[in-house]
Length: 631
Image (tube, rainbow, N blue to C red):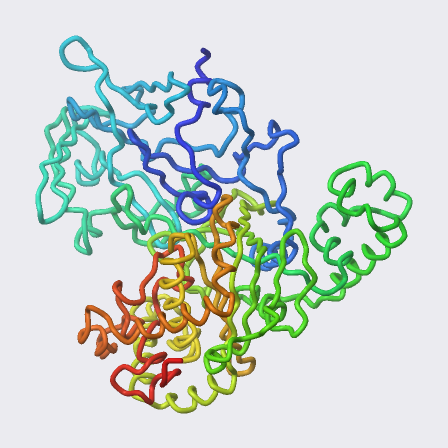
């Protein structure tokens, strides 16, 4: 086997959704024997993918990505992949995938504690078992008999809030900023001594015997012993021009704050009753370059036009293309820094008296009997979505600080590519869902009733403290600590959603992590009152039908009554029931905990924030409850 082939072979596997949320571009992935960094999209290769899907069509999401990254982006692409690895793990398919590189590049021998970078060639690499990619490893021939000893990554890196990451400067650190007086490139030794009070790892220079403990670089005091950030983006192989003015922080490999994916997600919702217009919109990337009517017969010989537009004539198709192009050209430019609005079309589709016609990506209906009589005070509308498609796109990532879902200026987004990207990674999942709309008059009356209550004031003030504690030192000029405040309506709808999710997960056959939510609360100018609970898993499990069936009248009555009744009690009461944020606390929930309301991070759209049982069912003060009586 040639030398390059040793390194261009699988070292692991990940689901497409992992590339959006946990293992995307710029993230560190912990493998059994070392950690790997996902390369930027400049290094992703599609030249050998062949006929397998290379583009994901979703016009609304593509427009939103262009709003954030610029109009250079014209495609959403899945990760490069072709089948065949399972049958022949030594085939070309095993060398097609998402490229990674070992990081950190400093490694440690588990036998002799030698600490050296990979480029020093002190260590060798083996990945010779195609059917066992998890056994890929670095090794060091040392000790008696020069046995192959396992080498692991040195477990410390530097990162800053500008999205940069770098190797820990072991040489400079152990020599306190100077070079070794005995040798230009001395061997180092890393000895992990354990301990309960923090890192207790000793670094020693084998040539001059200088020694230093890594604990001296930890915490706020330790930052004084660290150099300034070099502005390194290892996933791109670049350094920021002029360096970086941020102070780096020491992170342990595997720390949860080393990478936060910044994603956009949209449901594939038909934009109207015109099925031809909807299909043109869906496949616009394939159609926008068609120069005229005379080219359509040729285009019909190519997918997707060879099968998606069979029912329409060439003249009808060309007219639809012209209408869609004119509509795009007439749209005003939007230069606002806010996140794009992807929820309004979805809310309009679900709340419309006439649901959109079914397509391959969307099919929804209302039960002929409407909302059950027992639940008229809880729901104004129930829609069963037996077919949904959600598309997710990765537009960047942050380090140390998670992106704020309402304020994109508060964190620095790291790039996916060395230059303006022409595409971004994306994935799509298919599933089913239930849309529930609360009565607007009930919500409006409740908002007026609780607007000046002690609970509402406590939640709003806690939100201001949360924003101030987290971001006030980064904003130049006036800082509005209440920007993005979701309002009390969101608290009520979000809490009701979690109550239903926890109850549904016990009966629908899906685990709670397979469910997701979208809250349509709107704002003061455009109040909304919708909840969508849907499956969001990247396999066939999301379309089993178990969720939609629970929206049948008899089932929905039972589930809603059980969810609201259970919300009145928590095994952590009275501590849970009495909880409200008080100064100086800045947590963003009230009567809520892991026992009664919290769900998995992949399920909740706001990280288990903005929840309070007292705002939905009677707990303590009944006047605060949206539903003062359980139906």
